[in-house]
Structure formats: C-alpha cells, structure tokens
Length: 94
Image 1 (cartoon, one colour):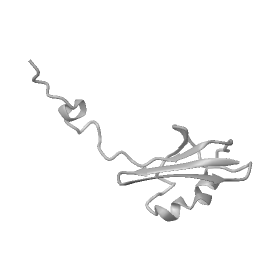
Image 2: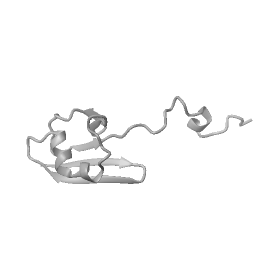
Image 3: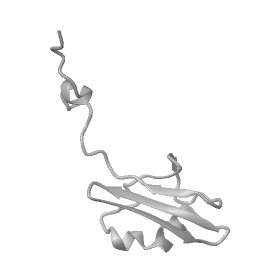
Image 4: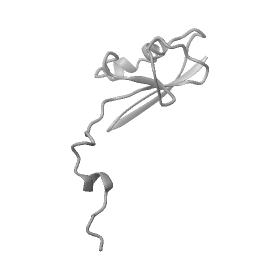
C-alpha cells in the first residue's frame, strides 16, 4: 500500500510517497523512507509523530493513503513572545 511521509524544518520540507507492506506500522514507514538518514537530527524518542495531524504511536498500523508526519519542537514559546508580536499589529490604533 502507498503512504506518505512528511517532515518540515524552516529551510526545507520533505514529502515522500512510499510503498509499504499491508501490516506496516508508523515506524516501519519512517525507517523505510530513509528520512532518518536525510535528517539525522530526528530523534523518534523526542519528536512526536502523527497521521493527518493527529498524534500517533510508532507502533500504530497504517492504512492505505495515510500521511505520516514527524513533528519538530516549537521554536518560539508563545508565553514568552510579546503580545504585539503575537497579534502582529500595533495596539495604538486610535
């Protein structure tokens, strides 16, 4: 069956379609895709993964057409970004 693998970092995005066995898991697809070689910074013990935007377990079974996504950490903590930057506008609009 065909599934997709997606990973994005600020300077580069990767989207692959691969063929996996019918009983493949999320981890099987990630390993088979070669993405761990292309992006050695991916640590599956700390990076979350998901299928179509919903967090999934590495041992979760895939269905035909699933899109496996590898999520990276948040680079800016919303609690520490000044409100004006979050909103993107000046509060002094009179």
